[in-house]
Amino acid sequence: MVEVYKLIANKLPEMSKSQRKIAKYVLSNTESVPFFTVGKLAKMAGVSEATVVRFATFLGFSGYSKWQKAMQESVKRQLTTVERLQLSDDVYEKEDKAIYEMFHEEIERIQTMADQFNAAAFDEAVQSIIKAERIFIIANRSAVSLGAFLEFYFDLMFQNTELIRNPHGISEKLFRLNKNDVVIGLSFARYTQNTIEAVSFAKDRGTKVIAITDHLLSPLIPFADVALTAPSEMPSFIDSFVAPLSLINALITAVGRKKRTEIEQHLENLEEVWERFHIFFTHK
Image (tube, rainbow, N blue to C red; front, side, top):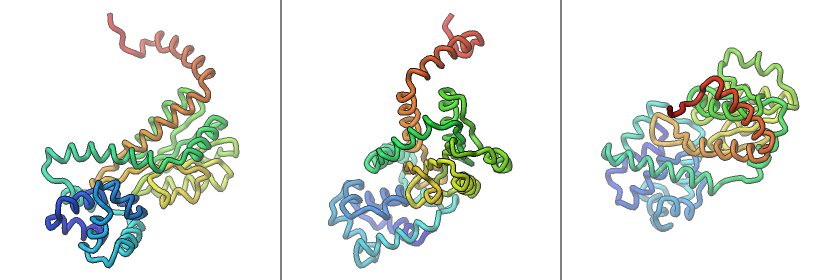
């Protein structure tokens, strides 16, 4: 486990109620907190700025800046799946309380995303998707769930979208890329090498690349023309996709509004086909 976070986890039994609030927030947001100011962390954890400063010295650092630097260094190394599982045992208390804590933390992740939202980048992504001749979505491992959701709705609207998830077929699929296409890369810590290589190839081909990832230190960022970020880290062996899915929902909705007339006609035609093949349940 990364040393600074292991230190926090080990000291949890010694902490006051306010210190534990800081610790839980930090351990649930390991990739974003290292770049918070004292004021921002105090606000997000629901404590005073003085409490945050005292927390840094409680951990053994000479001040907040030293603690912050230690956390920033730790961001360069991703926690293994086993380490994340161990961390979840340290962060959450009783099992029944842990469930409600997780619900509350998911709300906080969406709020963090909203606070850091880049409207200009979002609008650029929407325009690029609308203008694209073809849309290729690159996603692997757990991020495939997000990619499939995005593919379903964009292909429903435009009939030009393909999810590429098989690492052995990426080279053949992406060989067709040109400057009129758009590639959307989805990856979150721990990032998959295949996704990084695919967006790098797309960048070399001159194709517009949209990265949907967890933060601006993501290895997808150097290859992205447009970056959209949503926090996914949580103190568990799984990823939290509540905020990324909210971002994707907003993206799909915004694209649909821009192309409303064409999409409405397309969906009306589809309704006839769905009725013919009895796609949806109807009450008798």
